[in-house]
Image 1 (cartoon, rainbow, N blue to C red):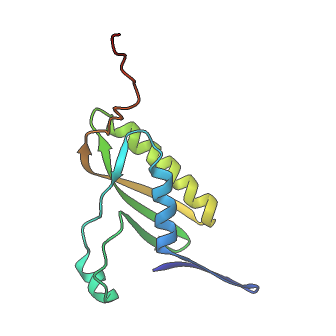
Image 2 (image 1 turned 180 degrees about the horizontal axis):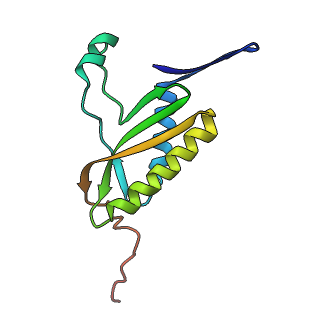
Image 3 (image 1 turned 30 degrees about the vertical axis):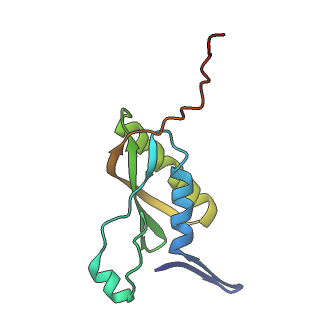
Length: 130
């Protein structure tokens, strides 16, 4: 599936991969997101497409001129799920609407797993005794 717009001046086609990339880039900067998870494979659509490629962490459904986005994320341990999910919904919706001009009716955030946040051990230097 792809997003299509046609006018008397010509056509515009936006691939699912482009919309997925927009969503991932917007969500990755939200505090508490540690990564993304591949969504469960939809066997029927995979067979229809004739491809067994790795499924994207973003699912896009188009109904008329509106988009319905689902994104599968991994969240950091100790983060409150609701505020993180609401921030993801906001930034993903804004990014897709601003870049594609399409209305995003909803953004579903699916928490795929809870992971330990990576600690940067070199961030705080230790002092040695002389």
